[in-house]
Length: 307
Image (cartoon, rainbow, N blue to C red; front, side, top):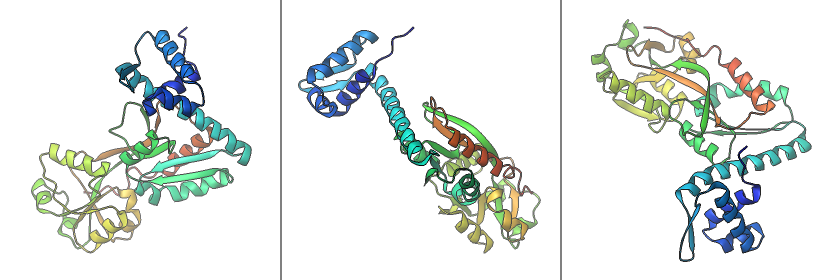
């Protein structure tokens, strides 16, 4: 069996890496400098590799040390979160939920999900962060949240992704727009049009741009908007053609205020799901939250497909 580093060694390496000093690391850990040095030497012997490099009074990590640092910090973070969760259980009896979700999911999914979740866990400590998927994964890396609900695709190697549902983007136009009378929208028509798209820093815009380029079509965005309601209202009055998920315009399509048309040959599918640290085990509270999310998205696929 592999001998694992003990917690003193883990804390010592992290402290030295962050302070770049044995003296400051010892002060932070409230131990002697020799105790820190002993822990590092013992760890280097145990792993048979050099973890630190010295340049004068400055101490820095070797390549081996840098690999260990991320893992050690994640391990400490998990231990601290376990301690916090135990404290919350003692205080509330129901645990906690720290989730990041895209702005669109916060508007169209989470309100009904949270209503049901509150009925199940009325005393749960809840924190919800909204943002783009990439921003939320950075929060996950800093242990500010535990789960991210967002768009799959690009993600760091330390992240685990589990799909919840798929959707496909469509054009939406005013009933008076010429496209509302067309069965299919050709590449020439697409290149003439001005589009209403979600924020250009978002994962959705990146996927759209790549998909159109691969299909040999130039996407010409007219307005980049960070709010789905603004895209819908602009499309209604004929300012441009919106590119949205049908489940975000369900009511407008049913009321005849907007008309949906297929993007055609362009790959317009998105995979939505939950991100978490690869080694993390979800709590019962988190599992129930995701179960409610899955139930809430069962009608999201296949809404409003036309053209």
